[in-house]
Image 1 (cartoon, rainbow, N blue to C red):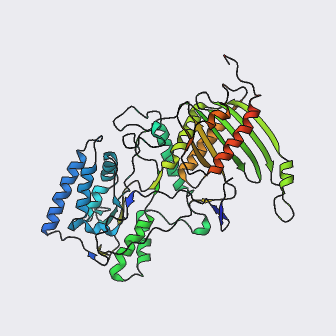
Image 2 (cartoon, rainbow, N blue to C red):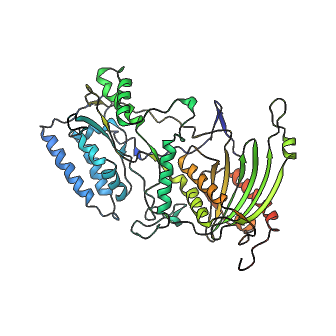
Image 3 (spheres, rainbow, N blue to C red):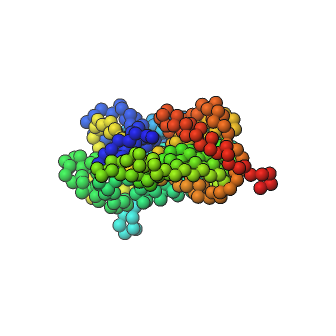
Length: 472
């Protein structure tokens, strides 16, 4: 069982994945701290040249072949950002580094990158026709791409599509839409937030955020007020979990074995095996309820004495199972990013001038919180050929949106169980042990060893269960 660290009644998974950043904090290394960055005067020659250069880059990006390399266009983008009239972009450390043409185009067009650069030449004026106000553009993050072209050594390479293969990944397109909707709902419901003891969720919406950040910045020195406001905006920009760009194949076969404790006061130590090809299911549950002593400590002897074992076989929906396993595999690839550009009204009296300052390092993260009703399940997927994959899930739900969706899909698949004979036999433990698993989620070695031990014990019980006769 995983060891967890306690904090104010909540648990934090030690070593939990920190959301990946799509940007480069060191892009503005050449700017000397203390330098004042003002915007170019619209009547200046530099401003005219900057506009022409921006138009040239825009045409070039729009004409790029999606299958081609973006490196030359990205170099031009970075050179433009480091030129005189675009240096005020240093108000944010998120200089984009798109890894493919698809990523570059999405950031440039849908993500507001083009509008962001243009805003340093002239602030956009938005709002009702009779009340147009200047706005600051906060661009999206440049999304990473996961494709076979650049990731042939990736643990999930067998499920990656080449960027030129338009037919690849058709089965999972709907799964991606469902995942994206789940991620959005997860954020909207605040289920990825820290517990309430760590503070209430800030109000949302660009107008509200702009006003509240202005109030927060009002205590700053007048020369630093815009920078304080812009920093506040940056910390409160809307971010959500998203899968990488790219198309992905679906797992069609192989066996999934998953084990661990489900429940808290009333719990089951479970080991389950599922065949992705047929939906064959084998289940071994050992259940009890925590018996407590007068001092509140767990009475281990009484708890174990009340255990009840149940061994079952049957069939689950293979389609639901495949989607669950797909999300279990890819959930570690999801990132927390800003997916769309945001336009914040500039408060009256603030002049967009920034002073270069030394950036602090990102604070250390203890990972996502867990509560005492959550447990960690360990899983292994064994394909017909090639290396196995191992991972973990927080049960019965997670503050991580991608993991939470994977758990929900697994629950949906398991709820479809029809008990009876199983359409196949579970591979022997020796088969699982003969192929080393590639670790997707930094699963501790002890957890993998426990999974293998649980499977060996359950297999001895499953051997006596009847298999379906031909034709059934």
